[in-house]
Image 1: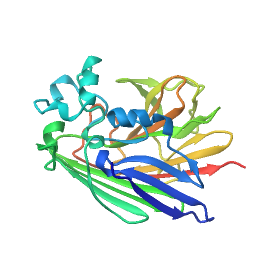
Image 2: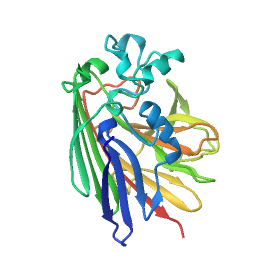
Image 3: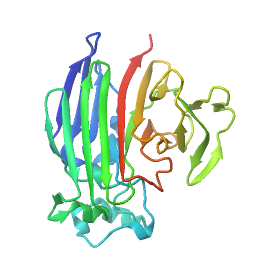
Length: 295
């Protein structure tokens, strides 16, 4: 397993470190500022078992596809996690898409990494498009800048597709998620009103305490003072600052995922308003991550 470690300094001299694993899906293994970790390391067993946990990618599809869209016929022994999934009666071999399971080609320096994944690339003598069921080109560029980790992630695909970031963030006690959103949320495949104790209609501000099981989708709303979508995980000691932009503002959303009593929360920017039914064959996301200590 090859690990690429990027380093830089913040404007105030704090050390920034980010580690990626191009040989297993370009997943983000760690992001630290001044030695303080942002990626939940307790999810590493998920990464080892099935390329999930830590900082996993989404794409070219979201979660599990419809049965008729799943492409089989390849040597499933190449991916040991598939047998375990079948034992749980799970039909989808590649939850959240093939991108997180296979090696990417890349070049890197001390502060940035650029990587590519093509459907015409081969893994274990099989075309990667034969695992996913469609041809595609994906590009990933990450750079440590003075105010955080900046990532540009894009796809061009044969069929409608979606990309996103399924990053597992450390969860501090009494944390809340705050963002500006539309007044609906997606629960499974249904749109519902956001509960009034979570949402201020007049300001369009969402505030959710992360003390319960959550698996919800939200469509962001641009705030007058910000040309990007800002999501914060706020606790008594620090703020995880997550901001992103999409190449198509009519087709973007983000997922909030927190299993009950787990020590992580996932904030997942996506390039589709309904990621289970994507419409675009080209999309691009720009993401910036930073964490701020609260004195």
